[in-house]
Length: 416
Image 1 (cartoon, rainbow, N blue to C red):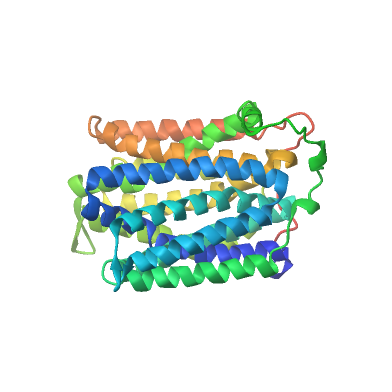
Image 2 (cartoon, rainbow, N blue to C red):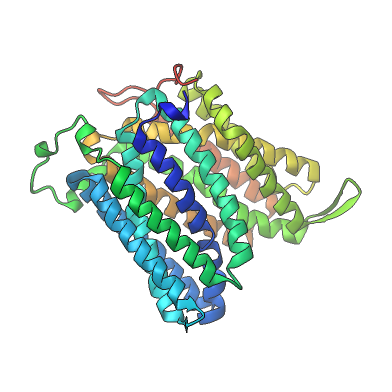
């Protein structure tokens, strides 16, 4: 499988998503600091929570309507909103204007736009990809996302504090280019789907649609597994970072290493391994069964986080960082392949929107882990992580059992 063999929509989406992720990650992580300084930590926390909730709600609505009116229309509308929001974000932080209220409102509008785009873009990829190509597609997408996050964080670190107007202007230009690409080169994918939207009853409203999604037992087992697995990832910059800062102090190659330096090293190892390994590793894994990949990957991933929760031995922490990264490279693309294989075509974007809620739930568990860690010793947190990982693996394997008329995702033998 090669990049050039992919459907044009997928190739374009991977490129545009890379630049969108890059620009978003150059802003979002630093907005919390900006808002805390400008309006206080309490109000900043409330505003960020409102952004998450608003993004989640509009994502559900976008998923519902995308399955009925088409992907491209809503994506174009969302991108227009994004350009509008980023233009005024730049204006509100320009040499001619310094408006905190306008910044808050436009940041909310930008989050709403992203919430609309997310499930639709994911559904579009499934629309035009065959089962044997998805392992490669999601592996490639995972790689580009991580590279974009890394570059975006560097851009934000260099520009956000002193050159916000330049940063927001660059992001606005990128969004405008993406809008023209969507208008000129992206094709509607609804016609390529096997289901007929005319068969969907007219009185089937959004509540009934999502009621059906959340009554889908197999999907909800998968949803629960995702929440448990992803919540471990959200522990990294919360409980694990705080624990290392307060407990870790060691030598590495005769250099004194602080807890924060150790945490930075772990994150650097994760980023470098993803950049180097994601694409070739995804191709190599295509020859194995999904159940095997998921089992081995989740075991490595869980073990890595379990060790990070309690160990203060530098070399063991480094080994654990390698272990959990390889495990994540195994399980994360397979998770997307599993999701694509189990959702009905008539409500594809709605299922993608519901799946996006699992990340919100995982983020809440990540924050809760920091609170629980204040009362439990580190070895107890390690045990809790192990239980969460085992639970995720059990639920993932259970969701791999085919329902009537469905089959387990097969290895991508033709993809390598």
